[in-house]
Image (cartoon, rainbow, N blue to C red):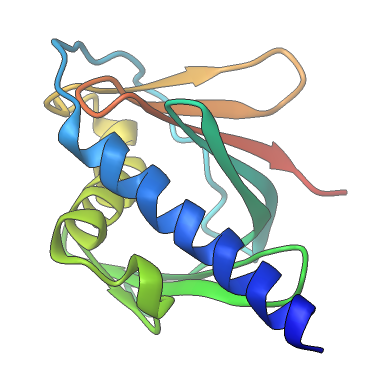
Length: 157
């Protein structure tokens, strides 16, 4: 039992370091894409892979548009909720975020990336270093080139 607790704490600590390192890096960027990637009609389910530097976070992302706002949750493979989000009026807010990831710069980066995905991508609005790329298999890739973070959304069937 003690070994499992230490392993979970080590994994969470590594995830925190990964996101912190990703937020510190800077790079020039561009934006592309004028099409809407998400369906507003029903709950969208994606296998999400977040890569920052040489680390990864994976899980199931659930997104739904209702009553003029986006709501979503990211749950990892162990069933632990990484965060919830609500996006209204072009802004995104994270709630119930894991304590080790609950740092202002990590929250701000993730919220900014999801706000770009949910509100700006369909209108071709410049994203300050963000771009979205449609992949042939129906998946799409959100890139934060300024922070060297990529989000791969693969539809779950």
